[in-house]
Each structure stands twice: as C-alpha cells, then as structure tokens.
Amino acid sequence: MRNSLLRDLLVILSCLVASWAVFIAVLLVTNVFFVSVILFLSVAVIYGLNRWEGVRASIVQAFRRRGRFALVCMIVIFLCLPFILRSSPYWILILTLAILWIIVALGINIQFGSAGIINLGAAAFYGVGAYTAGMLSTKLGSPPLLNLLLGAVMSMIVGSLLFIPLLKTKSHYLALVTIAFVMAFHNLLNNAEWLGGAQGIVGIPLMSVAGYSFTQEITIWGVKLPSQANFYYLALLLGGLLGAASWRLWNSWVGLTWNSLNEGTGDELSARCMGVAVGRWAMIAFTIGNFYAGLAGAFYSHMTSYIAPPDITFYQSLLFLSAVILGGIDSIPGVCLAAVLLVILPEKLRAFQQYWVIFFGIILVLMLILRRKGLIPVRIRNYMRDILPLAATRRTPEGPD
Image (cartoon, rainbow, N blue to C red; front, side, top):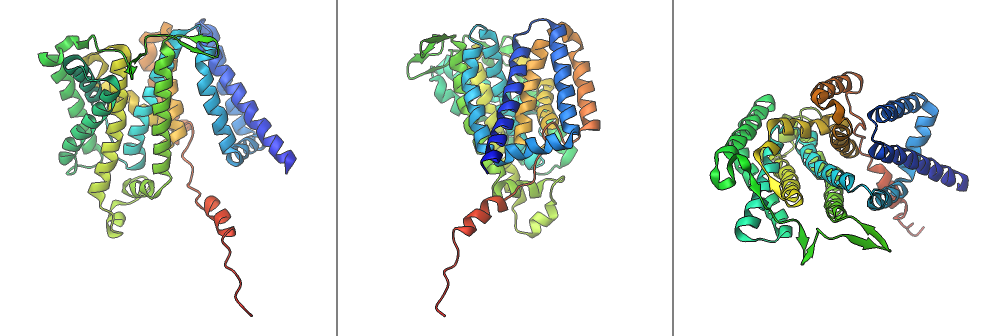
C-alpha cells in the first residue's frame, strides 16, 4: 500500500514537473526555431507515451487514484507562475487573457458540449459584457467589480431574448441564427455613435477592488511582482470558481439532463417522454454559457481599458468554439488546455502570423481525422466510485435472532 502511494505520487510529480517545465520554456524562449523544436519533441514524447500501453496505464491510474493531490499541485503551480514570470510582465498578461478564454470556452462547453446547442455567436455575448462594463464605468462611474456582474447578467438577458426565436430552430439552422446575430451586433457597434462607433470605448477605468488599484505592484514575502499579477490572480480566482461550478454541473443530474438533449449523447424525443422540459433546460444551458462569456468580456474591458468592434467578430467566435472541439467536446480539462494553447501559440509563432489561419486549419483537420474526441476526451461518469464507500459505512444492523 505504501509503495503504491509513493509510486503514484512520484508519477504525478514527474508528469507535472516535466509538463510545466516545457510550458515555461516555451514562454521564455524567444527563438522561433527552438520553440518549434520544443513543441515537436513534446508532441513526440506524448505520442510515444500514449502508444506505450504500460506507461500510459500507470499514469492514468495514478492520476485517478490521487486526483486530489494532483489538483492541489496544480493550484500551487498556478499560484507560483507570477513569481516565475515576474521578469516578463507581458506573459503574465497573456496568461490572464488565456484564463478569460478558458472562462468563455467553459460557457460554450455547457451550451455545445453538454446541451448540444451550437453557438457560433459567443463573441457577441463576450462583447455585450465588455460594452456593458465600458458604458457603465465611463458614463455612470460604476465600480469595476460590480460591472463584471452586470456585464454577465446583461449577456444572460440578451441571450434569453435571442433564444425565443432559437426555440423554433435546430442543429445547423440554430447555428445560422447565432452567426447572423454576431454579424448584426458587429455592424451595430461599428455604426452606433453612442457606443463609440468604429473607435470603440476608450478610457475605461482599470480594475480596482475596494479602493485597491490594480496598477500598483504586489509585494509577497519580499518578492515584488508586476502590476499585471493583480489581474492574473483575480482572473484565476474567477476562473477557478467558474471551473468548479462547471464541474459540479457536469457531474450532477443537471449535466445528465443536458446530455439527454444533445443529439450526440442523448435523444430529445426520449427526454420528452421521460418528462424533461427540453425548451426550459436548453434555455438554462444557453443563458449560463452566455453568463460566462459576458463575465470574461467585462473583465477584458477593465483589463485593457479599451474595447472596440474588431475585438468582436465572427472569426473570434470560431476560435472560441474551436477550443471546445480541439480540447474534447464536454471535456472540461480538455477545453481548458485547448483554450490556453489557442492563446499562447499565436503569440509564440508571430513570425508566421500571416500563415496562422492556414496552420490552424490544418491542425483542426488533423485533429478531426486522427483524434476526433479531442486532446483530452470526455470520461464516462463514475458515480459508483463515490457511492460504494458511502454504502460500506452505512451497513444495516443485524436484527435479533
């Protein structure tokens, strides 16, 4: 038992240290050639380990048995990243943006991954949250922290109104409605002078909480961190809370209800026969997903102090949705990983920026051919793992002879 525990801990620590060392190296290395070599070798090693059945099985089992230990280690690493990257404030800001992408991708995963609602207009709801926060702060002087909530709520309201015509559509017809919405919203922003027109909203106050300005540096245990760490830690807190909420929803009867509506994992007619209010649950999934997108958009506006129509396009919606497809549909860890990669890789491969769309299209096609279930496929829910230990502690007392 003790040997098994030590072996599992060693396997988990080895995997985490190796993966995060590669991640930090990719961030800090500036030469594109060396970055490409690191990425190629990393993919080759992962592919080799995946093909080596014995090693793969031991790694998977270690993480399953000691999942809480792995989670604690991940949290510690996330908290330590600003200390490691304190000499590179730019990358701390990029990681904050990656967390915002994770939040948006988690919202789309609820809509598309769990409930099967194809939302190709996520950027519009991201923009609703951003513009709401921008207008409230510049026109009314509303505090930034309150604007985050109001921006998210406004995205929910707009999504609820849009969902009324969506109730009459399904599958690709529903996708067309969301495409039309994001394009119409983009044109509205370009032409509405009261929303800043093509110039957008400038001079949005930076984030502050209870009088504490995020423009000042942080000193923790004698180590001075750049001001960007303020945004990182707040985004990490929000991302952690929303990620935990997404996990609880997915692993509960709510997630099972959404899966029953999804054409890929359930059957709508069967769900109706079992008494599931299909329209109501689809609207709940759609509005919760839009809440996530609106919150991330509001945060973005207070982080950059600027929001404009070029930030809210149909192409941006496709990138958000791609995080769900690449990571693994309905797979929360996979969605988070893909969102980070979609933010980091374009920044590291700026030398090939004009070819990025081509590279991205090739990667997406290869993923659909070679690994259709995504980087981290969704696992089957295992409720018995939690029920059996509980049942063992509640044995029925024996009666009298």
